[in-house]
Length: 85
Image (cartoon, rainbow, N blue to C red; front, side, top):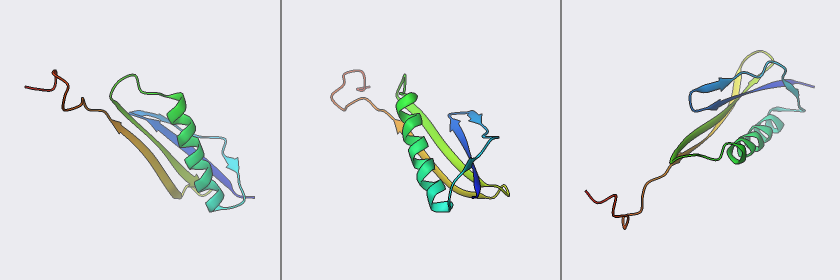
């Protein structure tokens, strides 16, 4: 069974997966990356109006096979008095 490595980024902080995960195929790795990204999103709820998360998947040879990302950019509503210049 092939090994896949899931490297995560939270803003500027990069976490390298050195252990890897055995999965049946590339599609399973892509699905696992999306699930991991969703879990990171729940775990790292933004403490402000900006957040950027990503997961990069590499195969055992070090070839990047998939990348998924989420980005939050929060802006005040047009009716917010602080937004009016």
